[in-house]
Image 1 (cartoon, helix red, strand yellow):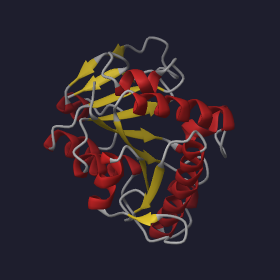
Image 2: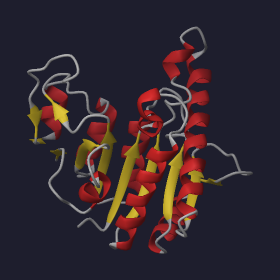
Image 3: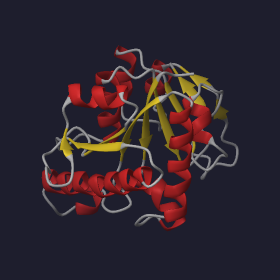
Length: 231
């Protein structure tokens, strides 16, 4: 059982099959699992993406920094939606953003985030690192290191890490356990190299698992064998 985890949620995962906007049933399913995991004693932080509203690559004819800042704002939409859904279950939650949007969320302050976690509030980090040219995966690895998370658990659209894309190759083989160097040397599509390196340097295990599996967030957060473990 991990004492403190950081959950990385993609925006697309919250959108379901449509890939756009928010799927209320999926959000409710995620939140119910977060409430259950919290009741088991786990301190929970979340980094959420924004791909269901905007991805940087959509702005291919735009300035890269502008497109990335738009993506950061999109993550805030998801963070606020998650926070509202969590609090509707009677569980306290806070949103902290890496760029200042003081009217709707707290700015990221590490000491404040740690205090929230100690008080069993669920903390949702938005806006990635607050800098263009960095992914939300990098933001997740950074926040996991800062809050000294026992694990970074990644809810994905497939049930773990494969040796090649299982959506394109029916012979793809699921890999139950990998080292950080395996991921880098084999160029496996888990996280970008900056994120993997940060987790390796800070000794943060990564669990990649399928969001669609029954109680998958609870199982991954409680240390059960699920998906692919990278350490």
